[in-house]
Length: 390
Ligand SMILES: *Cc1c(COP(=O)(O)O)cnc(C)c1O
Image (cartoon, rainbow, N blue to C red; front, side, top):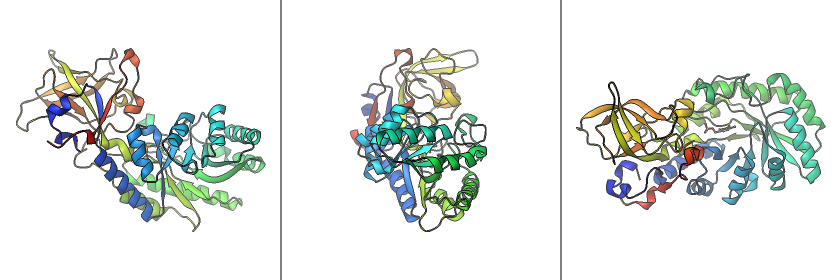
């Protein structure tokens, strides 16, 4: 149920701040993604790092998505939530021995390997444990995602992936590895990408590298093109879902694959972002000489994206009337950091202590990034099915 549809008095009964999850929208989004992917024979592994709230994972798992993990604990969490080991991938530039061993013992589907040294470590550990490891080699496609530099990952100077200059060596190391099978190539250009041309450029690179390997006699079973599909942070109500059809269509059109080749995706944000809002209460309103401030009981400890990468989130007062007088507010949190600000000069109805504020499109990289800085309370969350319609 959409947050505006909820009786304000009911909502006010909950201790703030909390994450509100619109489970109906989540289900609709997952279903739309699934239909669009299935139609083209594509596989989606959900990137757990975007949100690993139990109910959200349950919903994703029950639809048959795989899991894309970036830590041993995420691998364990996926298993605990019922994702089959054969549908779990493990990525990340800094996998520890302990994490690699866990993944080997659990016989997950594949490791996305990010360096030659990691390849050798996985080979050694697999040998010690008497296991075999499937690996996909992460290749830096050198495609500019035209997104914030903190969330661009596919350029040569990034820490992610095997540099192109080392692929020749990686291919020869792979031939020497006794306990490792190369199953795929992995690419991920960045996050919050809304320009489909970026994905088109990615396809061109994937084709090039696939051919490069095949010319060297190495067959590639899986083309893993990562995630990164963006959402509309400015229009959560009119654009509650990304255009999955248009997104998958790009890959269907521009990716060259033979009959046996599978195409895997690792979507995170696109599946969960719009389903979450952070609900907070106004503690104080303050008028400076030039500025008005709204001080909330939520801060960067509950939602870090604005402080971390100047991310925009739509901010609304709940229970607003269209004709209410508006003021421009700097909406800030209680944390002792100047960057603890959700938005500057945000037009909002004149607000007062006790009013509820919703910070929208917070379902991805929100709850998962919550911290205890300032010894803040554990993050709280409620699900839409706990409410009745107004
Ligand atoms: C973070 C990440 C994803 C998910 O990214 P979204 O932008 O949330 O879709 C997928 N693959 C890799 C390798 C990642 O690091």
